[in-house]
Image (cartoon, rainbow over all chains, first blue to last red; front, top):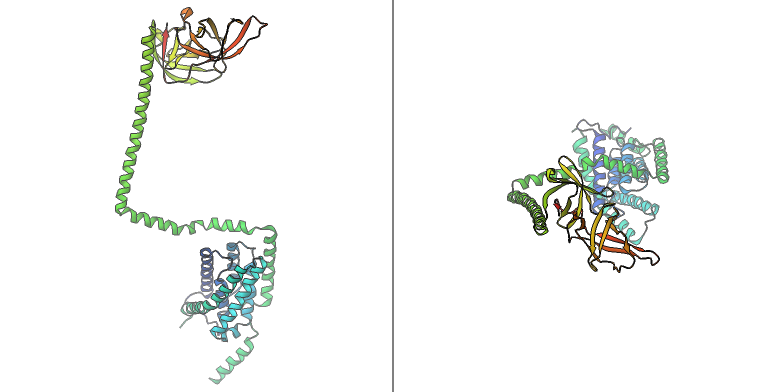
Amino acid sequence: MTDFIDKKNTTFPVYLTIGLTIVFFTILEITLRNIFPLFLGIPLTLMSLVYWNMALPKSVGLFWAIMCGFALDLFQDIILGSNVMIFLISSYLIQRYFHRLRALFRVQQSLIVASMILIYQTIFLVTFSKFSSSNFLELTFFTFISALIWPLIFGVLRFIRIRFTYVN
Amino acid sequence: MNNKELKQTQISQTAIFTTGSMRASKIFPSFFLVTCIFFSDFFLNYSKDIKVFFLNASQPITEIPSAIGQIYSRATFFFSSQNQLFVEIETLRTEIEELNFEILKMKSIQNENDELSQLLNYSKKGKFTFSMLGEIKSKSFFPNESLNIETDIKKLNDNMIVINRKGVVGQIKEIFPKSVKVFPIYAKGNIVPAYINSNGLNIILKGLGEDKLFSIENLSSDVDLKIGDEIFSSGLGGKFPKGYLIGKIKKISNNPNLKFQTVEVQSTAVFNNGSKVLFISP
């Protein structure tokens, strides 16, 4: 039904482009967490997943969400599957409502992404009993930063999508 | 045009209830699988092993940037003036090592010369009827303590005494075609005529073989001795040269009910010292 929206690609495989960008953001997230050794960070992987689920829902399967989730679990030394479950639920919900999300203004999208990140990080803090005043500050700070950089990520990924996955 | 817009509107209206590839029927099995993995890791904690495996597997890739950095720094270093200095330093370091080795050799030669000089002094002062140098080739340690010494065996006989720069150390026990075997002076059963320096009493020392000890044979209980008294070779019997320190009294067991007292003498001979020895006949 959404075939006419997800235009066929002949320049670069869509699936590979999505995978490469998600892997890139995962590596970037891990690198940033290495540089700033805090409990929380900017969830770039989740944000890129949100974008691709919203932009090309038919092309994003479970595979990338699961793989990147496991990679983050391994890096963060947390129980295997913690990130994956959140990524799966997020992907499902975004794909469920992607038409509505697409129609929103960028600021509104930022607010929704920030809310998702707030929930995502809170789940981690509660699950791993790390809820302290300093972590609360981290949570607020990274939620705010994530909302701010969402338009940037959106723009970069949109440029990549148009540049590499569309036939003009 | 109108038809196209109409079609898009219809699709938009219905599209709210569509999903991408991820329908509920698809996500439930995946979610169930991930939950199973979550709980199995919670109880079995195998994620650390997986992490270690991946770290090991990806090690060559993760080391590429540092390897490139090293190659680059080496390449730039090779063409720099620092490299010349580095090469010069390395050359000087090698020269220093060679000189150190020379110093060690010279020290060794000096030590050998000192040893020979002392042995020659012994030879001159001792006025021995015969003396000859020998070089230690091998050493055996307790319980069969001995020295294997290379020398001209034609002029040697079984009764000769061996001294090194520390004093009398032993005597010839066996003569082989190219070398001699020397046992220590304190070898078990070895008899050394001696005198106690404090009272001039002539005694017979008998080697015990263990712990460089002698015992004094048939020493009367009346003789007054002190621990630490020095004992010198008396030269009686003509086998050992006179006036060489043999040992010091270590232990005295004097029982008034017995006729003789038991005395242990600690040998002062340093059997394994140096590399040269002097064979002498008093």
